[in-house]
Amino acid sequence: MRKISTVTVVGSQWGDEGKGKITDFLAERADVIVRYQGGPNAGHTVVVGEETYKLHHLPSGILYRGKICILGNGMVLDPLTLQTELQELKKRGVFPERLFISDRAHLIMSYHKALDELEERERKGAQIGTTRRGIGPAYVDKVFRIGLRCGDLLDEEELKKKIREILLVKNRIFKNLYDHPGFSVEEIENEYFPVFQQLRPYVKDTSVLLDGEIQKGARVLFEGAQGTMLDIDHGTYPFVTSSNPIASCASTGAGVGPEIVANALGITKAYTTRVGEGPFPTELNNKVGEHIREKGREYGTTTGRPRRTGWLDGVALKAACRINGFRSLAITLLDVLSGLDEVCIATAYRCGDTVLEHFPAQLHILEKCTPVYRVFKGWQANIAGAKTLEDLPIEAVDYLRGLEEILQVKISLVSVGPRRDQTIVLSDIF
Ligand code: GDP
Ligand code: IMO
Ligand code: MG
Image: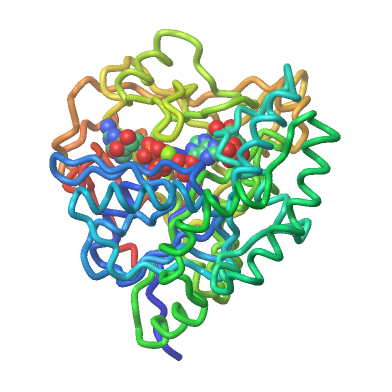
């Protein structure tokens, strides 16, 4: 049997764990980098020397020359912002020479973005706090079987016919539910057709392409967006995104067999953040929470919103380890915790008279949970220059070892700053 050399990078919390940084770090040794779900709701920051790149659709491997980058069938793509992302990179000297877009990936259109706005407005006090990028409505259309796919761009006459049919359905919703004029065929064609033409050359059956590369022995990195707690099935429903970021869904979203995506690496921030609404048991609405927000520059990459901050949640992480089958963890932003007297990890939740070991499905239970913490001694030293575990204060090492003990999963990488060279490798990943 051929040797499989792949890594699946998955967020283990509520997104923004540093997936972009770790994917970029690992991409040096990869041949192919694949995004398998989500769309421009993602904001993956990659720092290369003095340059900072914020990627929304494109895999965080695009910054190396010669790598094959794939936007998988599980994604939803906004052609307008994808085009802008490509143009901005080109202006900065990054040319996506080997970029491929799955012919089965779905398109986010202006009516999806309008619906995302209108639906959030209708939810009044119960908003999800979406990124308003049209993600939910585009996935709804996929499941409702009225989505446009990238493969549809290849035949203009068929495409026009499909748009006409889709708008008949969509406009009924706009007019009857939202008192909105809806969208005309001409308006959509004028706005989108010039961009469609430019994206057409990238469209391909990427499952076939990827399989061919794997047969040749290519090393493949699968890059998840969002995180396990935002997963539509396993996250804090309904305060979740509309796709499956978990490792097994890299198989569905890239069009490969499950064994190809099994080497899952859980990207775990040394504390917790969340953007948007929804439960967050270890949230810190105090000075420590502010310290973390300011030191970690915890403001959204996509929307600029301040991120909510809190202690590491071992209960949520235990669920993430189980659901994804993480082979190891990459701990990121450890440097942000320097300067605190103590640091905590939740090991269980107390809910009335009961102690919960496992993350509950029901929101009303979760909302009543208070964390049971294991408290660790903090450390004061700046660790941004640490190159090995020995360079870290003993208290920081104890914190990492304590986390391994709680989760029963080993740590393979520790990140102490946004740059590539601020990464401590404890064991081989590929
Ligand atoms: P992603 O969505 O998971 O890719 O994460 P984001 O890019 O949205 O947010 C992570 C932020 O932390 C980015 O600004 C990164 O540049 C930054 N970052 C990543 N790793 C580290 C680290 O180890 N230390 C510090 N201080 N910043 C980091
Ligand atoms: P990356 O890949 C953090 C959150 C939104 C909202 C919920 C639903 O950078 O980690 P959506 O627009 O997807 O319908 O919003 O999910 N969300 C994210 N939070 N990081 C992300 O991506 C996110 N993508 C979506 O804030 O709460
Ligand atoms: Mg992000």
